[in-house]
Image (cartoon, rainbow, N blue to C red; front, side, top):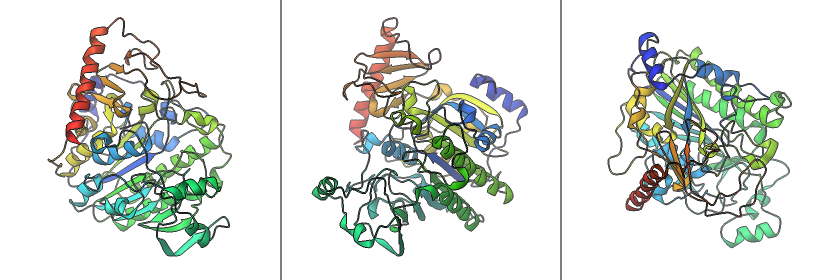
Length: 477
């Protein structure tokens, strides 16, 4: 489909698409994949597999070509989506939580679930959490009525101190003794690693705040998450509901259920993405069959770019530079698809610069929720963009990449010189760049031409904005 300038798209939609302003409180479903790259959907140029269901979702809704995750790694990205704030505002500057972590996202942060729950929504978290695994940080302590999923990444181990359900299942020959023997707090973590008892790639499956399966059968996660989402729809279809479905895939180790194994030219990664595509199709079809397609806003996006160092088990950033853990476009720019029949115009491809941070204020607007007034929000309400009413591109002040390493203002992007890492090149990755960079993203999507020497004043302008951002963050902490 041809991509039109956003201003032209919205004019044409006003004339012919028949969009409608929302009435009442729409159901909300956010589908959030893990380490899926910009080039990992057919509609974004994927090769070796087909995502027909998500492509249909895009054809019936709005697809963004410049949608950004809040960070290029898991924890701060997820926090940004759920709170509308850069995680640096509460002290997280790019780190992730581990099974041995004793902290999590502060309970004082206001989540989408808490905001929507105050409006009478039934709220469910499904899938990867990664904002703290101890009881006071789990979804049920952050506004969600129920939770099923992995408390962190699927390549991690377990914390033997997490409570067990009475009917817990031990798989793969593991026993209760194995489970309790490993408690990765403090020095015990290092001892267990040295003794080979770290149980890598063996996370637990948690229901609410109890472990119901260890290690989780990862080949069944996508299917189980999908069934859980549809169950939540059926249980709560007479009231507004919010589902935060954060898939554990395609983060490595990859796993797919039997019907999807060996089905794509792309190998296991393609199989996994095909199953996620199936999942999206199942959920959208469930909404159609229940007459909820005009009452439900569904959002599909990813937490960060692809893990390129994983080779064939990693995704693709398409035309973008680098991937996960990078402040180049490939680390932050991800697919963004919005679907709401009868409200969001169909078949729209937008070049509007939107971010996961925008979901919080946008969903507040469409649900009639009140925004917190005691804190700084970094996202902006893009509901009028989604509904085809106007082009708000000029209203976005800037976007900050990866803990303040880079900034985008309009078409321009300024990037600090790298100050971390070894500088060793990794497969399909990047060596560290020791000079400041300036790119025009409209002309150079792949960030191959550093034009800082031609436009030094523009670089200084953006650099000052970035420095001011950090002053603002420090005041907020």
